[in-house]
Length: 403
Ligand SMILES: Cc1cc2nc3c(=O)[nH]c(=O)nc-3n(C[C@H](O)[C@H](O)[C@H](O)COP(=O)(O)OP(=O)(O)OC[C@H]3O[C@@H](n4cnc5c(N)ncnc54)[C@H](O)[C@@H]3O)c2cc1C
Image (cartoon, rainbow, N blue to C red; front, side, top):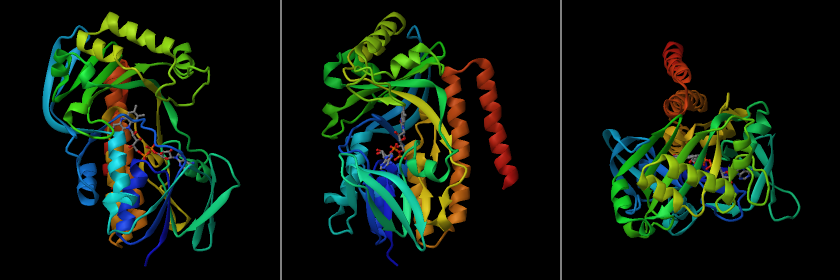
């Protein structure tokens, strides 16, 4: 029977679930608070679950950047190690564009189309018999509205409003470091720099800090020549440090909770990063950092919800709203894709909601422990690294015993 489905949040997780549910014949409405599409998470690693979703419901854009290895470098530029592992990278903007097309655009031609409502900020949720009522208002003003559905998916990210309304104690917590991020079009970089970063992921290890650099297509995905070099630079800043305060205070003096978006990072603060890079890093990394014109910075957080579904399965948390991983393993989008593929089984009657909840929380718990371990490899002290290894082993053993 066709259900009225409301999805809160229209990013990667919301769109994947929206397409899947529309294709199953349900009437899907996505409520997204951003009035305009803003590309924030610049680069996304494509793992098999996300590729499967793209192949099933849309297509893998030909401009996706393929790499064959991951190379580690010391601060002085000395190459330490290369691991051969094929990988694919996309930009968050292009991924969402392809998914959006499949949901309600040209890609959905001949299919049941969903409805995507921009500027709709959700602020309440309640059960009303067999239905769930979601309250929202337009970010540009106007009186509050509500919409009712048979099923509500909360795909509203790690800071999920729905999760916090239903479980007020489940706040995300600061992981102790920030990620400076930015992209540079390849045509403004020297040929040697492009050649240095070609066909691989490069990791530069600094003292309890590190950078990851790889190629991604442009948000439009036009062609290989329009690709960008994507950079993420992780740095430890304690909760009360003046560096954290400065990083999160934008050019207008406004303090941001988590991300200072592109175009708003204080140039003085960014210049100190550029100068530090010039002092510490090998030439190709320095060139990329000095040519980033619109950097942005994110306070890295983590969260795992103790519960996945509510109101007898009529409300379900998916994507980062359920488990917000540390970004160091680049697994968040893949996790969202896995939630989607497994939730299809629930909708088809091949898996119970309780089993989905158990399976996805177990997966999330292990992925979160792994993301802590990987982050500590580059950012932690020896003691913190050992602790994270023991915690990962403990999680794995605990899960095996519980099963
Ligand atoms: C530094 C960093 C690097 C990352 N790198 C990678 C990577 O390499 N690979 C990877 O897979 N992932 C990466 N991620 C994670 C990725 O950005 C997403 O978090 C992931 O794709 C999961 O997406 P999501 O749809 O669950 O959540 P989000 O992308 O956070 O989307 C949530 C959506 O909900 C909307 N929303 C929020 N509240 C409301 C509300 N009240 N009402 C209506 N709408 C609302 C938001 O506007 C947003 O569009 C990175 C994240 C960070 C911070």
